[in-house]
Length: 251
Image (tube, rainbow, N blue to C red):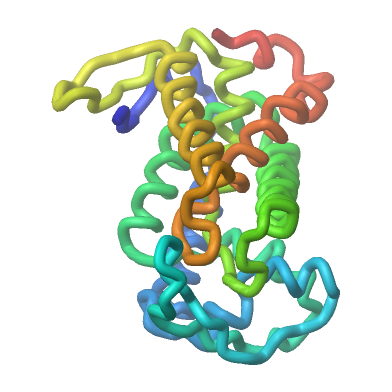
């Protein structure tokens, strides 16, 4: 597994204020609104439930979680009412996390890769790009859950889909930029196309594995959101970069 810890910012001339704000919001939501992951009522009220997005109706009931192999019940999730439209959860879920490790991993990726995309697109465009990629990633998760027999009542949350969009934009705009990574227990530098390419290959392999018969009834990683967000970033970043001039051609 490859783990990025930094990249070459020698040509960045702007302060990535939006990226800093996004990181701060994610941390503050986890600490104060999610109660460090202990406030289940808030988390289950504002995370994305595929069934709610498909039907447009709020669900307020316990959801049975089954073992993906034996189908034995292993627990329940008490869904909470969303005080406003259920569709708002496509946005709110992007700023919530399932635990410290989930939050740390996502914020590290956003810290490493987000600043360069903000520099390339500009602050306003970067914010919109981030949010659109996150929304499309959530919709990709909803679509695959329904189409491939997942449990549509299990909520999803996290910034991973939006950050995957940032990675898609980064690999297209900055493929040759050097990224410092931990790989095979060693600290080294590789081009972004290698670092992000290996990450995407991991998402794709695991995502296809789930669709081929893996855990579709329980929780876990929403690989469809990662893949959907990444593809959205690839498709949209050049559109958002129209008119930005030389910064788009940064290697």
